[in-house]
Image (cartoon, rainbow, N blue to C red):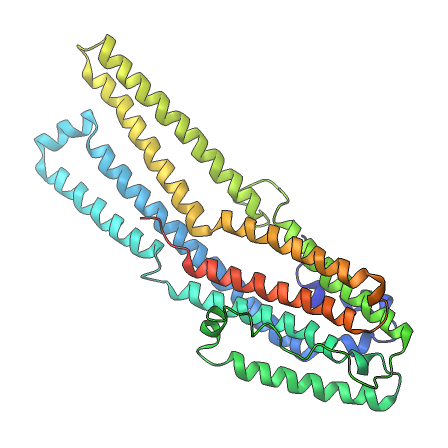
Length: 369
């Protein structure tokens, strides 16, 4: 996905596209105040996500470095120097222990862990703002699809009040915990999604709103979820996807595992066939140990970045989006009816469920030791 947040009209050309597909109601669908709030949280989210990932990666790297320093100290060449110079062994031990403790604390979030918490808070609030946008507009579809001046004038204060109430709720220190505790998903709804009685619905305007919701909510969320399964190549590229990272780590782990077996087999064979030169076998044994350290590092990194759980979550989300699409595209939803609102509720409940699963997964992610 080359552009993000076009569903909230955050990129150049997005408003022009909206006016093209919804010429009669486009201005009523544009919510600049919400977009500004979303943008503020999105920028902080991107910054803190980068810091959180950086600290975890550095922490795991330091742990691996500590293990390699310890391993190097046991090699035949270094061991001779350590025997002749005890201070060298002591210094290596101090370095290894210090780096190990600092790396473990950094990777587990004991130090610098606030970056993950602030990242998650900004991410959840931003996603709730996205949900608020579509839910409030759907809840006020009777005003959007009413051609009278009175109905259109009533929409602005409704949007303003909804955004004000949400901001008040999201600013509470316990907001993220309330989402975590919401096991029954009672907080999914941010607006009353039903068809108002005696609503005067212009059929052409309803068709445009339906097109808006399909393209900027259903299509966009599906495209976003599928982008996580697209391979772009390059683990270190900024545009690399979760699947890129998953396969890169898996490839490194595979080579390290093959190296472990080969080094160990050669070490055993040398001991058997060349028993007079055990120091040669020791070098291959050390290679096997180094491979084990690399396997640990890649496994820990996969665990702390939650790559496997993330891909599973998006598979489930795609199935829910498809269900909502079928409901929204059926004949009963051709008019602004209870069936259409049920389809909207299905999509919005799925979006909230996916967001909450993301939060739970990231909160539980920890270093596996």
